[in-house]
Length: 84
Image 1 (cartoon, rainbow, N blue to C red):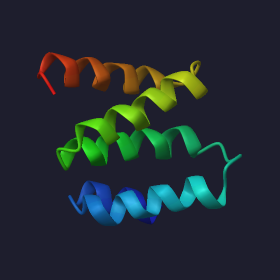
Image 2: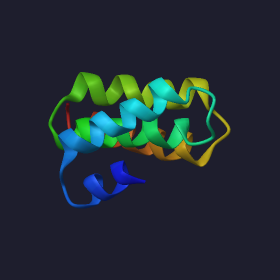
Image 3: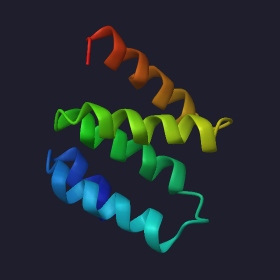
Image 4: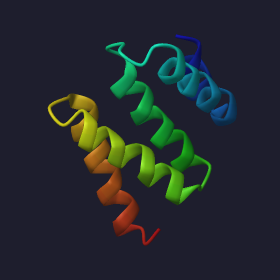
């Protein structure tokens, strides 16, 4: 996935746009929870705390029984611990 390669190389704006595209164009796809998670991660890396929390919370609420939700919860706790 192109978005993943952007994320890994630190191109968070490009990654974010492609993860958003996955969600918009394939709303029922099995990759949606992962795309939401990575949107949260990208926003975290960009210092956009509210957007990061929103994406991560959506993962935990809409996809509760997934690995993505567990990872989102961990990142939400980290954001809180860091005081953001």
